[in-house]
Amino acid sequence: MDFKIDQAIFEKFKGLAIGVVIAKGVDNAGAPEGLQEQLRGQEAQVRAKLNIETLSQAPRIACWRAAYAAFGGKPKENRSSVENLCRLVLKGGEVRHINKLVDIYNMISLKHMLPVGGEDTDKMRGDLLLAFAGPAEPPVLLLGEREPRPPHEGEVIYKDAESTICRRWNWREADRTKLTEETKNCILVIEGLPPVEKTAVAAATRELKELVQNLCGGTLVSAVLDEANPEIEF
Image (tube, rainbow, N blue to C red):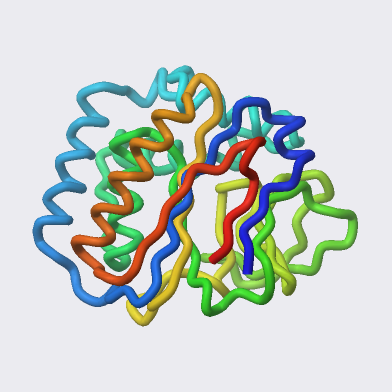
């Protein structure tokens, strides 16, 4: 199977770079104490550097608000995953434990202020594609929702041969391919839009890969995709 970024995405969002970590044979059970300490530390850093009133103006948040607006999203209602994390922390909350892989990517997201997510590749059907939604995408059950709904035509989605995997780029993922403690094989992505440069995405990707290797084991490969290199096999 391949992960591919549709050319139309690059035409609309110039300078996009997506870091990818493909992990096979991981152990995602348990909750290492040190990882929770790192999460608390990154939460403290966010509170020290940002405030809720001006968060939307931070360059690494504002670029996603602009991207959402560009495909018809409502940034005040459908926030990027990194803005949601930062808002939770700035309101005094803590990022709750889900599983090792999710905790790792949440920590990296807070540290680098980039959207980070992941999916269980054993639950996918066919290739993974980042593209604009078509007019007849099938309904998808998102995490935290009771009824499946189709994405809107023109919004940015991750999808496979069955249905959408994440709506509104990185807003909310499908329940079907979520990471669990039983996950053995997965794909993780780190998304960067200008002013974030490809080198910054690459650095965050290396750190993500190292943490997964150290805490979950397995066989890992990584890459940074851009317009010149828009796909990777997994």
